[in-house]
Image (cartoon, rainbow, N blue to C red; front, top):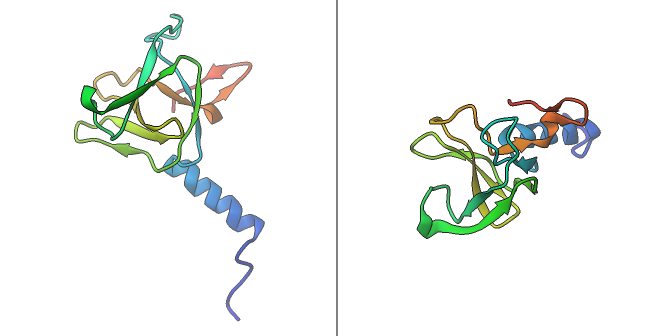
Length: 119
């Protein structure tokens, strides 16, 4: 028949891996500190589109909050990385102008003993 089991554990694993690579259904922790040794006390803005503009700002996320991506990650014309998440829009994950600073840390890169590593 050439078919195979459409809803197999292997297929679900492959789909989950593809979603993770694309950024979908991935959990991120908000990190506003500029350096690892400085406690973040700020916020991360949420935008209606992946564009850094006050007119598109629709909210703010607090340090330490966790968001889940609901669509594939994207880049704008300036190379900024954006995540579409479940808190109402897009937030910037990383900017090429400050590559050492990541505002959205993937939780699958974190553990209780070593903290978070940067991808």
